[in-house]
Length: 283
Image (cartoon, rainbow, N blue to C red; front, side, top):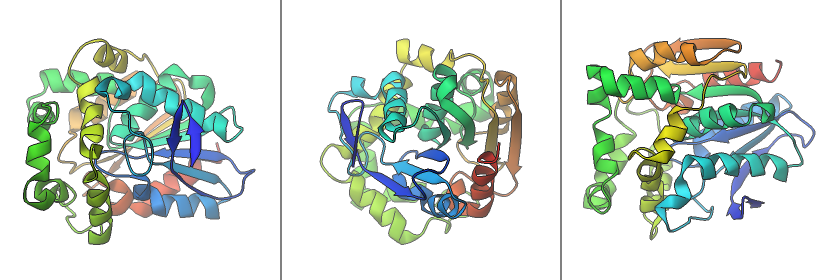
């Protein structure tokens, strides 16, 4: 457990204390364990790997008000986690919502971002444009309209022993990639009082319009060396935003398309994700 930004965060930590620091940010509806294989790979490579349960998840604190989940708060969590380990910067990686936080953090705190490794989620401005203009991305993003509805989303995802929540992990080209034991762990964690609402507050605080949405999409060009890994069979995030992300990165940038991969890249392509991270450590 570490103290950061006024909250307690449970973190998975491995590797030498003096190694290059990586902070690995998970997405919805997961937890720190989504990075287990990458934490082990980074530690073996001599890096200090830190994978927190983000606010609202796992054993980390969960503010009750949805306003506590705006992107500014989430980015400041990362900032204070880095300083909690006595560092002034770190390599930052994120998947899904963790990727959105990583993009925003790199835009807001470039001096604290050694490298940026992003999984699945394109640059927020590229995703916003595709969600507005691209029929394919509009169709892929329809679930967001449910998730921002307080009460209804909880009812739908909790129904029949969280059947739809569990099913999310099996959507895509590799339905058996996430082990059943891991799905059970994530589901049990989110079934605790208030925790599913906390996770859904990421959508409600940031994707329902207003200042948070503007902050998310107007972070400006990314100057940090960046690698973006995208599965070309991702059911939620389509090709247009993935291919246009490079327009929003002015530093060294590489798009790595993982052919045949879906959304859960740490499980579907663990070796390639780990290699992208350990390669970043040498930059």
